[in-house]
Structure formats: structure tokens, C-alpha cells
Image (cartoon, rainbow, N blue to C red; front, side, top):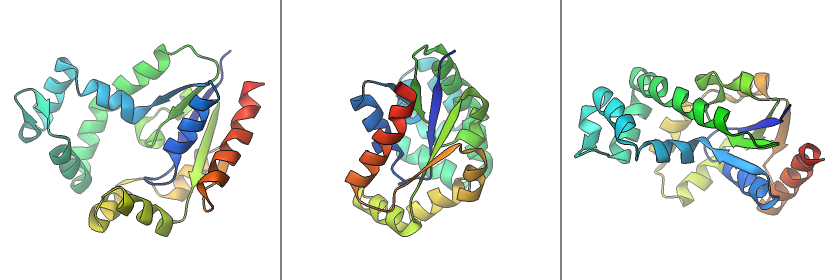
Length: 187
């Protein structure tokens, strides 16, 4: 039996850095965001998105900024997009037979994919630090808050998490904690 590990947490929590550490350790690691980016280059998938968000697709290309604005401001639109995206992402994850497999999956609850994982690692970071990180990435505070409001609250994520990484310290602290935890699954 293979070991499937999800990395979860809110936007700006440090999930991607944990994924980088896994890759550096030679662990096969997937990102739901990377899978989604790949899907957005697939004409059949883009057609599905266009059927829901016709204003967000121009000449067969998804305007990601316009799509993000639409889904983060309207719960029904977000759910409609998730209904199209999550089965495709789950399929890509299921097709990967690596052992262990680490998957960065921000929407573990919304996707219904929690049962696909043996371990779910929650990266916990204070909101103020997450806001600073998002600001450094060029995300305006109002948009950052909208994204955070659209995500499940931390207490919901704690309910499914089997382990937690505290990311209230430095990047080096996060990387060390990630290596220490991921080593458990490589033995």
C-alpha cells in the first residue's frame, strides 16, 4: 500500500514551501494549483470553464485574473468551478502511483479528497504573517482578505489534519520542520 500525504493550509501559509522540501528530498510531489494550470491549457477543460464563465474565456484562453475575481467574490460561482476542477484534479492524483506521494491540496475539504490520503499535514501560520506574505506577492489586502474568507476556517482544517507544522517562525524553521516530518514517511 502506498502512502499518500496531503499538505493543506490557508493561502500564504507555506504549503508550497513544504512541497518544495518534499521535492528536494526526492519525494514525488504534486500541486493542485499546478494540475489546475495544466488543465487550463486543455481545450476540453477550457470549454467546460467557458460554459460556466463565458466572460472569463477569450479565444480559447482563460483569463485567470478575471476568473479569480469571479470565484472569490461569488460562492455559487466558486462551487461551480470546483465541481468541474476537483474531479479532474482527483483523477490526476489517483493516476500517480508514487510511494510516498505528497500533494499540496489547499481545498481538501471542498474537493472531497480527504479520504484519498493516509496523512494530512496542516501548515498553520498566523493571519498577519499570511497577509504580509501575500502583500509581498503583489496581492492587494482586500483581495487577500477575500481569498481568506472564501477558504475553510482553520478549525475545520484541524478536524481532518493528522499532523501540524507551525509556520510562525523563519523560513529555515519551516524547512527543517518539514524535512523532519517528511522523513517519517520515507523510512
